[in-house]
Image (cartoon, rainbow, N blue to C red; front, side):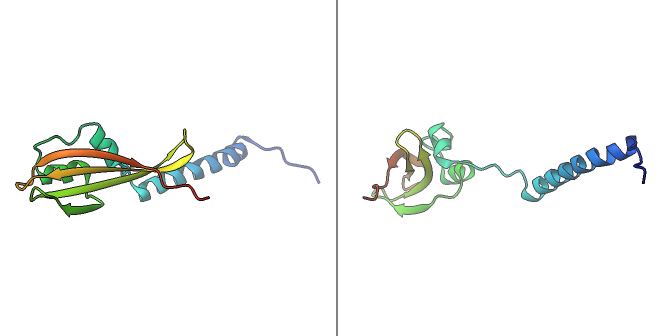
Length: 122
């Protein structure tokens, strides 16, 4: 039996078919997942997105919902934001917390940061 020689159309289908499939798969997956940006609230706070004197609604728009809220001594609230990350220098997990204090009129009165490393198991 004699083999038939492949033509331009045959090569186009053999090479172009998988390329088109991958392209359609990537576009389809991206459209399903959307383009939602993954944000780190701690980075936003460190970059100065929240300033002293801003009201609570502005903070929520810029940084998002806090992990927790507590009442503070000035009659306002304290928002706690957290973000976990891998510290490559110390080769351990690290948790960063940021606290936004609001006064009794719901305006930012202070911003503070704290980093914690959990104790290593023995």
